[in-house]
Image 1 (cartoon, rainbow, N blue to C red):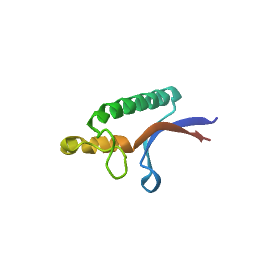
Image 2: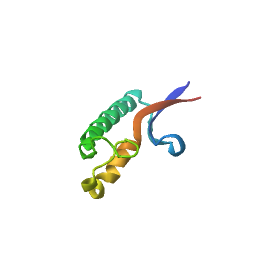
Image 3: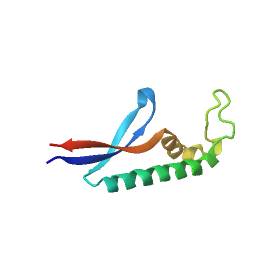
Image 4: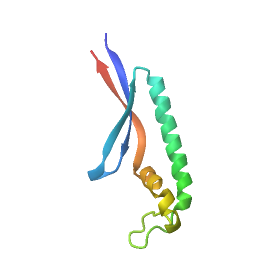
Length: 96
């Protein structure tokens, strides 16, 4: 009898600093897909919220999004973490 285990994950970073975070495992696919959906929804909402702290046209040199100077001390860490967090997903493994 084979049994499938689902691993809830999300990734952070890009290219050289890319990494995957394993959050939990379950035999219940429904539980894992609900978590992935909720994680992605909340990530989208938090990113939208933190855009109000960004400079409108990005930084002067690269044109990339950047946080306003007045918010650096209080909001930079969370803003930066949200920008580097990618959407959640899951993998499956079969136990034999």
